[in-house]
Length: 84
Image (tube, rainbow, N blue to C red; front, side):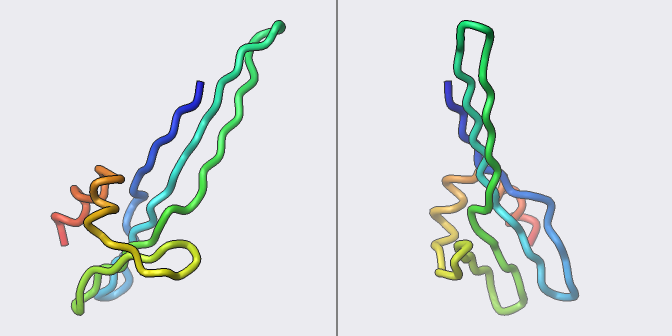
């Protein structure tokens, strides 16, 4: 059984700039004759930059991402962005 979640980590504020790291966690549980095998992975999904000039999001490879799409995919992000 696989489980995938996307979350927003605690924001980091540096002066007037706030960085929000979005991560994706995937875990798998497989039954075996002796019990279960568990496997998990946590990796970067995107970085959101909030500054006086606006809100921008980037993928781990540096490509711009639509913030509206990310807020639909990561419910925690919408709540965080309301504060900024």
